[in-house]
Structures are given as structure tokens and as C-alpha cells.
View (tube, rainbow, N blue to C red):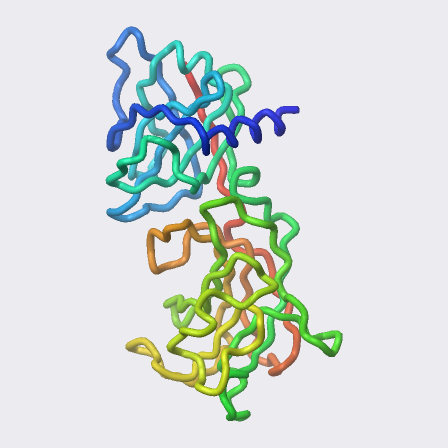
Length: 296
């Protein structure tokens, strides 16, 4: 019942908005009509100059801003109208533009949870997606050129173990405001394979990637051939063995060219990996973000 309540309350965020936000509205409670709302969250990362986090409480079905912040050091305390805070049923955290003309919450909501008494346990599972059963399979191959001597220089998220290619990623449907992105980490530098919504379709840069070969776009699944136009400091073609392959979850619009904190799948390519052979991924370093919110 509590999950249903939270889901219905969060849906309202897309339709009704009242806002009283201010940048880094993190202050002591000196107003007798206000009370403290304390956030103690783990796993968030700094968003850079263009975006901020904004808290919201759901009061009588409508979102009310509790303030914005950029620091990811917790706990943080915010001064909120006492009556509204006492009547709040749910807390939601969103990612917003730093200069935001829209008083409504953005689609990119990262944490949510229902109040039980004075506190709410919040996490990303119900508001972004639950990645606890996610699995991944990939192959090493370079199908976008005519050269069969560099097959270890491409990664494609598909499973060919049955003799024909099928989707290699079993991932949940993401909430609005989020997309998946694949990565290969080259000596500490992550290079994207492309973004995608549907793991059973080609990624968004299938026709425009500067790294792929010139003879085709590759199979209709997410992936990348690292064959040409290497970023400074790298050399393509390369060998992806002993490098880490990652699937991350990125906000839309994306706040950074680097992977976001949510990384549900990851795997170091074995040094003995064979090309054109299905390889299983493991759970990534961050599959969920969580924390607690307290009102007093």
C-alpha cells in the first residue's frame, strides 16, 4: 500500500507544481512558523555548474519545494513551512537546471520515499528503476569495417550464444528523464559507446559515431567499434581486454560527459577473452542511491 501511495504521489509531480525554491536554500530555522527538514543521503555526486538538486514534499497531492543544493556532503538541514511539512506524505529529490524558469519539478527525479511519522526512507529504486535483477552480456567484435584482424577493438551488448544475435542487456524500463549509456574505461578515462533507451535497439549514435568503421553501422544493438579518430592520448584500433565495460544511467539532459553515479552493470574484460563469444557482465558499483529524510 505504501508503494502505491508513493507512486501516485510522484505521478502528481508531472502535473501540478508550486515552488518556493532558492539556490542552496540550506539554513538554520529562525522562523517560528518553519520547521527543520534534514537530509542524510549517500551516493549523490556533484552536478557541476549547470544543474542543482532540489527537494520536494508532496502536500495534499501537490509538490512544494524545500530548496535547492549543490553540495553532496550530508547531513543538510532546510527550513520549511511547519504546516506544509507536517502534512507532507512523500519526499522527492529531482535534478534541475541551475537557472530554472519552470517552477514545476523536472522529469529527472532521483530519490523518493513516503513519510512514516517524522522520517522517510528514500531511494532510487522506485523513482528511477530497480536494477537488482539486471544482467548483461556482450561480445568483442568490430562489425563496422572489413578488417578481421582487430576484432578485440569493439564491444557490442548482444548475446550470440544461441547461434543468432539477441539483446544482451536485461534492464528495466527507466522513468522519464533518464537514459542508459555504455562505456569502456581506458586507463581511467571512460569513453562512451553511446546512449540508449531500449537495450534491444541500436544506440543513439549508431549512424554518427566518430569511432566506428566506414562500412556499416553495426548490429541493431548498443555498442561501439573503437577503430579511428581516437581522443587525445589514446590510439585506435586498440585491445579492450583487461579494460572495464560499464552500463550507467544518465540524466536527461546530461549534466556531464562522464558517467553518472548510477552504474548497475560493469565487468572487466578478461585478458583471455575470445572475440565473437558471449561474455557475462556483473553487478556494477552503484545500483541504488538511498538515504533518510527527517522532519522536526
